[in-house]
Length: 156
Image (cartoon, rainbow, N blue to C red):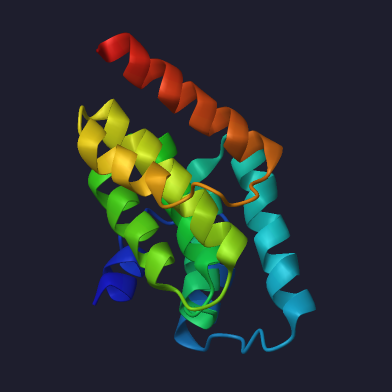
């Protein structure tokens, strides 16, 4: 049901006809290269702050490759960017359950911790950060974690 809700909640976009066609008859995206191409399109929209279009593309990724954390995390980030915290939280949590994509699950955990901290839910956020201790993370995630730690120290 979550996938259905996520897929049907955005407004039509200029690429809506293509996406509507894909949603009616989703492409298999069986090859990794195909999924990477779809992700790249969504990322390009996200980088331009076109979060609604990016979300449309990432919905397709979630629909066609729900076992991968990457689509869930990216879709969560789109909702996070437009202050739809409840949806973002649910999508980040879905990413944590996805069986494929360790690095993307880690990214979802960091983004979820940031979201929870912004809502004043520091204890929940800290639990997610503690789950990452000892892991090798991308520099950008390390910087995000350092920022969370600074914020928590300032709140004491």
